[in-house]
Amino acid sequence: MSWQTLRTLVHKGWWVIHHPFERQDPRYWRVQLMQSLLFILQVYSGAFVVLNLTLFGYFDIAIANLCVFVAILSIQIDLRKNLNLERSAILLTGTIVVFMAVYLAIAQGRNYSFIWLSLIPTISFFLLGIRRGLYISACSLTAAIVFIVVFSPDWPSYELNMPSYFNIALSLFALLTISRHYEKSRTEAFAFLAKRNQELEILAVTDPLTQLFNRSHLDAMLEIEIRRAKRDSFDLSVLIIDADQFKTLNDSYGHLVGDEVLVELSGLLQNSTRATDVLGRWGGEEFLIIAPKTDQDGAVELAEKIRVAVGRHRFTHDDLHLTLSIGSATLSPNDTPVSIIQRADEGLYQAKHDGRNCTRLGKSTA
Picture 1 (cartoon, rainbow, N blue to C red):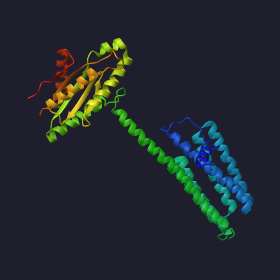
Picture 2 (picture 1 turned 90 degrees about the horizontal axis):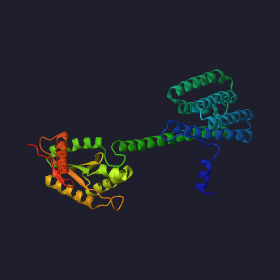
Picture 3 (picture 1 turned 180 degrees about the vertical axis):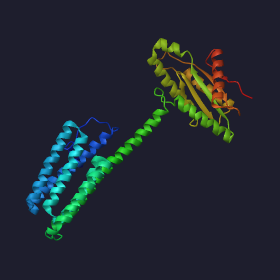
């Protein structure tokens, strides 16, 4: 049997809890942890039934382990059927606490059996959270300590033997295994949230149709680039691009074709701009380019390059073409984000007035 086949069988085993929760739902990670805990505890309780019956000869402890195995299996069946995470967490924690009390009373300190008490804080914190986990752990361990202090003088003395080594090694391994599964779930949850936050950050600045920057991000970037240009004393130009007669195109071909044209136009604009330029959808069929270190002549050259490329392109259907009107403005010493946009918009208005399919400069400021 290959390792991949074994992994497939593991992931499709009886302990797998099927649920509808998405990875962004905290319940998803809680189910994963519950699934791991139930599996680990079933394996341990089942193994100790066999060991205590065959190797150690502790029949009373074997019966207690068998009761735990049945209880955990019942909790798992209920969880698979009803997906009541809170009830299953309480029942599982209660099962472990009750078993530890019974086990402590039966074993009477035999073979370092009390080391298994260390599972109570681990499981209760993982399943019930900090506040309830602390309460359960404090009450359980305090009761256990009182019980040991009161009754341990009457217990027989036991040497460090093979069952002792089993208890110490297996309890520590159980803690390691449970903690590993908890940390794995926590790490995966943090990684997923980090990825999700990154996706949300991208969505927050991206136009959903064209996948270019949206208006709010363009506003923020324009303010940043103007401050940088003034601080470092270099040129900055802004271009507002408008698709001519776009309403007529929508009326003639439909809005779905219009959307396809805007997506194609976005690709053409991306291919015509530099890596340092900031390109985004300004609104509707208008686009904005922020061009750092670009003077007036450079802005006109960029605008004409874009206008000619788009004018030669055929969109979506062979019989569909598009022209652009472009307004441009270059940063003046007294410009603000509002004023430079206003001057570029004046240039766009003049381009429309002059018959469209051309580039015009906005009026300069003193």
